[in-house]
Image (cartoon, rainbow, N blue to C red; front, side):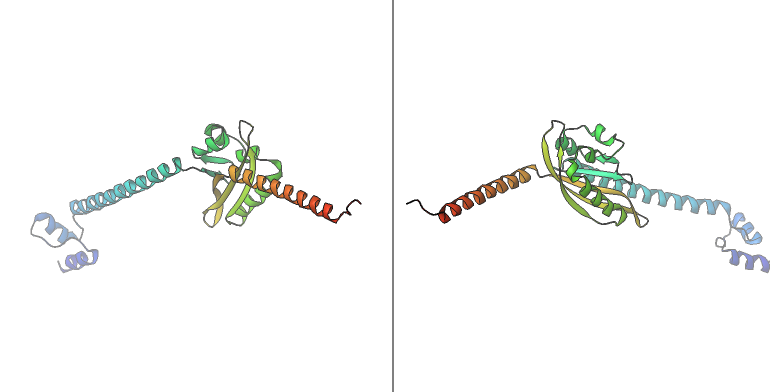
Length: 210
C-alpha cells in the first residue's frame, strides 16, 4: 500500500478520490485514462481555437495586402532565383501592354526581354547585387510596350531572403516616361541654347566689315 502511494506521487497521477476508479488508480499507480483523454481534448480544443484565430488574422492581412497591391499605380513584380517572374500585379499590364499570363508564363525575365539593349548590362548588375550580395538596388531603364512605344521605368528591387540567402526578389516598377521625356526636352533646349550662345559669341569676335 505504501509502495502504491509512493509510485502514484512519482508518476504524478490524478488526485486521490473516493470513487472506485480513483481507488484503482491509487492502488496501481496508473493515472485514470479517462482523465488523461479529457485533458488531451481540452488541450486540442485550446490549440484549435488559437490556430483558428491565427488563420483568420493571417487571412485578413493577406486580403489587405492584396487589395493594396491590386490598386497600386505601380508594377509589383516577384522573381525567383532564375530571374523568372512568378507574380506581377495588375498594373504591370497597364505599364507594358502585355497580359499578366504572358508575363508570368515566360521562361525568362519578361521585363528583360522588352528592355532596350543599352540597359541590359546595368540591369544584370543590379539583379546580381540583389541575389548575390542581398542588397537593395534602384535603376532606370527604357523598354518597348506592346504598342511599340518607348517608355521609361524606375525599378527598385529588394531581396527576399530565406535562411540567410536571397532566393527571390521583389521589385516595384514606376512609370517615369513623362519625366524622361521632360529631361530629353530640357537637354535639347540646353543644346540649342549652347549652339546659339556659340554663334553669338563667334559673331561678336569676328571683325566687322569696313
